[in-house]
Image 1 (spheres, rainbow, N blue to C red):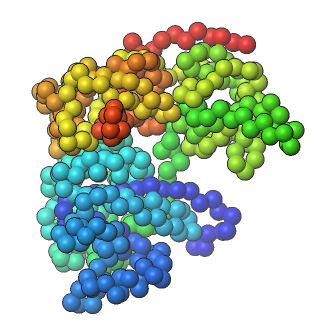
Image 2: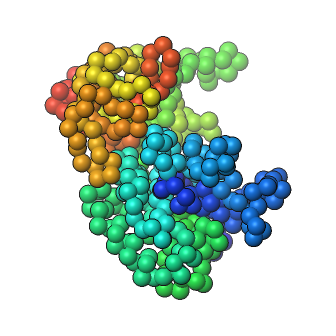
Image 3: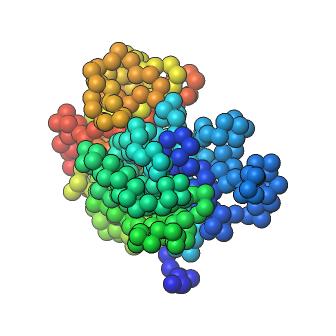
Length: 439
């Protein structure tokens, strides 16, 4: 069915994951190739490539495996991002590695995804890496999961084999708390059920992979209940030639949750002052209302001291605040995490000093079980920690809001990003009673 030109086109971010040689890069190459999303020079480069197989087939994995080491070994090492669009939706793809030692790369690529595709080799079935990556998707609270059973051509397009793998996968799904899981039989090499339906799977009546990516509902993936606007910039243009900008003072940032409307009462944290929204501005002009994840400038009815790092919220649904925090963290650096180490912690639009006060336990990524407390977390480990920050953070639990519940740790001196964290829900210590300074 043709899509009208005025039909709104939204953005879907998704990543691919799975074990080595499950066909992740080939699947993405097939998506781009069959959806006619490649430029002519890319097609010419593929055709000229020395990696054309003896059967005359283009090696589609080369569209994402750009590093020489990746092509030599036939594996994905770093995260590769690709962009394409159809009339229904725009897409950002993160092709993430399958090796255990590149868990940190997989977490980085999947951290902002709406959907994750876990590939399973139809010959091998569900293996440890399949469970491992599904557990990481669950930890990262990715709303939608697609299990693409690949290489169905190598098992004779067997419906029984597809059902067997589906049953294997569903056995451990309950412990992951994943609500939306879709199973699709595909052959990335030949393109079956990737963009076009395959005549070789008459027993499968579900959507193709691209059809599912175009139609999956992502509007409710954002937290639209609790308004949050971390202030990134105080906007004071004061352009002398434009009287509309005289004494203009707005607060700019990306809405991290909820909806805001002109006339709505808001509270500025941590000060606790309240005001009402006088105007909402975007690059395209004024709005009556805006919602997550739009970038806006708010003009308030009262002259209040607001600066970068403050958070504008709905006083009816206050976030937590505190300097003693609990979090899950994926350690990204070769130098291990140890208790007592000091770091810079970047959360929304502010950066504070922080110290790791304790390592509570390590998480077994294969089954999400807690292992005894370790003296340190090595690179690619995921564990639970406690932190103390130099000043209180305004935050939500990661399960409630992925934008206000996430942070990164930065090594002082080198500015290297060493950890990616997910805050646990506020405790009683992080739920202060904000004083209402209504004006």
